Image (cartoon, rainbow, N blue to C red; front, side, top):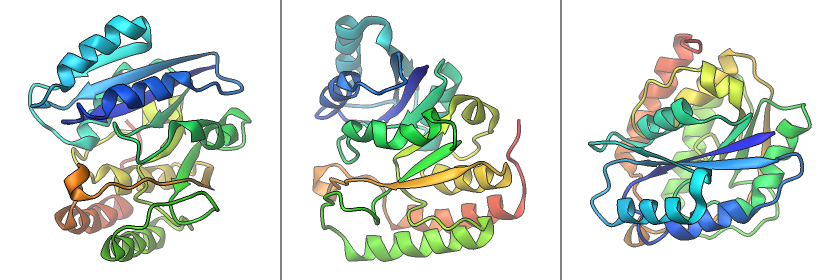
Length: 238
């Protein structure tokens, strides 16, 4: 079984090399091969130079994709899906807020055959989690509850950036949103497809804005729109 790691990258020259190295060090029962699909979303720092270095170091394990202009996380994931060849896939941000060492935890339900999708929740489990922004927590909780009302799921963390999927399911779902609206969009669509969704507790090393965090309150407002839009209209198949 092959794993595809879908990694959107925008101005992460400080982190991306370390993240890729840690991803490719992981050994997961049931996974025989892995590829990292790096989608450079028109970075303006040294990210592209580092990606070239990673290709030299890791060869075919790195699949580079380049956007000519910045399109957003959803568009980057869509591009990654178009290039992936894995039986299972996992979304990995190009920093270490989410730890690749937890891939076995995230992927085990899919590899074992009883899950189609797995969400890594920052709000359950005993793993260490960095304490940060109260109003982010309130906003995440509100968006998760609103999403659950439309999807009839009982997730605790819809907005998590740590999600894993069966490869065939991910390839068959159209991705319309270009930015952070990807999270409510994909959640609505896996619910409409009646996918078997599991949730596991994960660690979380969140960043502050000075450390490079990019999501803001405007993205939260947009998420409300996407929850309603994709919750009311079934657009879950290509």
